[in-house]
Image 1 (cartoon, rainbow, N blue to C red):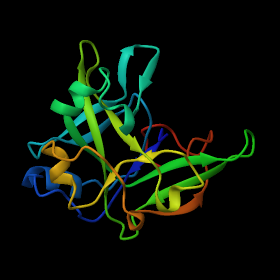
Image 2 (image 1 turned 60 degrees about the vertical axis):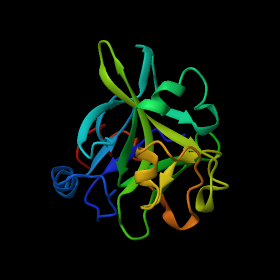
Image 3 (image 1 turned 90 degrees about the vertical axis):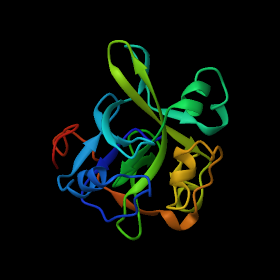
Length: 198
């Protein structure tokens, strides 16, 4: 399950629905930032606008539900958001970990063309926290197999509009959308601070 991703300068690969202002907002992201659950992050709405939302649905304050499994999206917990409140999550790269406790390897997933990864998301409005989003996850493909049993639902350029319009309901990210490299652990004390530049 993805619990850390980063923003940073990336090339195009935007949905057709993205309006000119939103395109400029994405293009203007130069600073690199690590995003973790409960932090605010930009998401793309079906209207083509970009807005900030808190990462993680919160049914109580003790735990943020940051990932929504594709095979559970028809359940009462997720169904309304999947049908009525979709978004895209722009990601420069995301991280996963493998191996035994105390000796875990960090894996850094990113686009081969240095494009934005556009990940399927859904959102809801919390009475106190405002709008909160959750990342859709699906079965792993390509380089993710063998590292993790789930992966974010990374959408191709041809799928983004169909997803935002409510037409796309199943996900199988193409194998050529991601590359992976081993990476220093971005969560290690002294290396990165949540939400800050690194």
